[in-house]
Amino acid sequence: KQDGTGNISYDPANHDFMVRTRQAKIDRIEVPDAAVDDPTGDARLLVLGWGSTYGPITAAVRRLRAAGQQVAQTHLRHLNPFPGNLG
Image 1 (cartoon, rainbow, N blue to C red):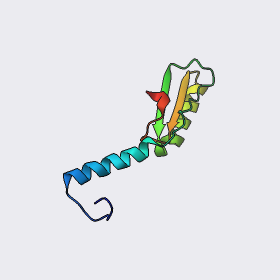
Image 2: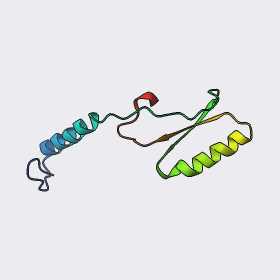
Image 3: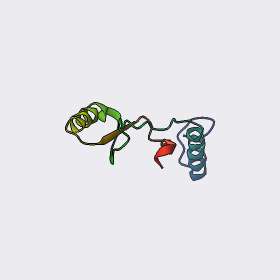
C-alpha cells in the first residue's frame, strides 16, 4: 500500500519503505525468552512446538517421561520476532 494514503502501490521505492516501516515496528516488540519445561534439567532432547501443536506435543512428552525418557519441551508463541534465547 502507498504510504500516507493506503492506496495500492506498485512503486518499488514505496514498497521498500513500507517493508522497512513494518520491520521497525516488529523490532520494537519485546518478546520474553522461551521457557523450557525440563523437570530434571538433564534432558538431551528438546521438543519444540508452535501453535496448535501444544496439546499433542505435551501428551507425547508426558508419555515419554512416564516411560523414563529425559525429554524437555518448549512451546513458541512468537515466530517473528523469535525469542532471543533460542539463537
